[in-house]
Image (cartoon, rainbow, N blue to C red):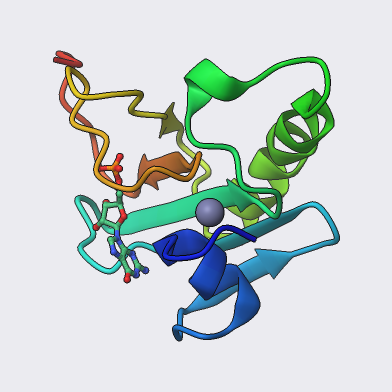
Length: 114
Ligand code: 5GP
Ligand code: ZN
């Protein structure tokens, strides 16, 4: 838990969110400003600032996130594909400095990624 971290507060329940999945290592909830019919954020329950901070000491959280993404996508009805994105740092426009993976889908997405 990191003070003044929005997603730590969401994980702790200090800030409300629309939960779609939770286990002891990760938490998934609906993005407040969806970019597509389905837009879910999956975050580790440990404060990891970004992809840049992933290392052997915390990669178990990331492994779990990727183990559950297919379940979350299936439960959200994403039977025809989806995109998983993590913005890292300023060039990628990361706005919340707690690692998160966007699951985006529910319509045909743009072919261009950037
Ligand atoms: P980033 O731009 O860092 O990759 O993604 C941050 C995401 O968090 C954005 O898609 C934004 O809409 C979402 N977000 C920001 N604040 C909140 C919030 O308070 N609640 C929820 N559910 N999503 C949020
Ligand atoms: Zn945090």
